[in-house]
Length: 172
Image (cartoon, rainbow, N blue to C red; front, side, top):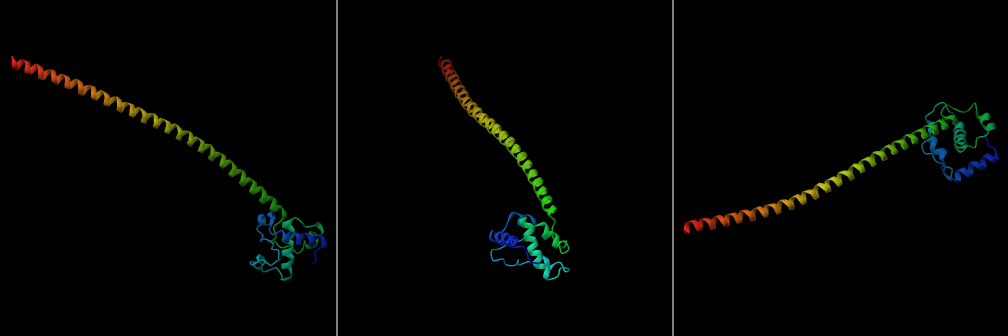
């Protein structure tokens, strides 16, 4: 079935632009500039589709994917559309499902960010506590060393006095 000239112009323009977002959404292969047929033809799987309707389906898919379908074209092809053609409502449902998935991912990202902030705050607090404990340990080590030195000095003085006292007692 020949397409109108306006629709053919739009299709050729779309073929020059290569793949569109709609192609990606409904899983169509990108339209190449040379208009080569796709290497894996999804219509080969459906045994009930006659050979002459393959080109109609290809044009129809491109038309629906680009949003160029006119109501007259849809009415003309209504009897020829097979169950493999996704309805336009399926694209909107797909968009809604993708929006829901993106919203869920967005919520998950925010939850992970909140958890990350909590972990960072805990890490900073623990690091500060570790530094404070390390500083206290260094101070306590220095204090202990000073106390030991003072005690050793005091013990030496006591020993010297006792040696002098003993020598004085023996010397008498």
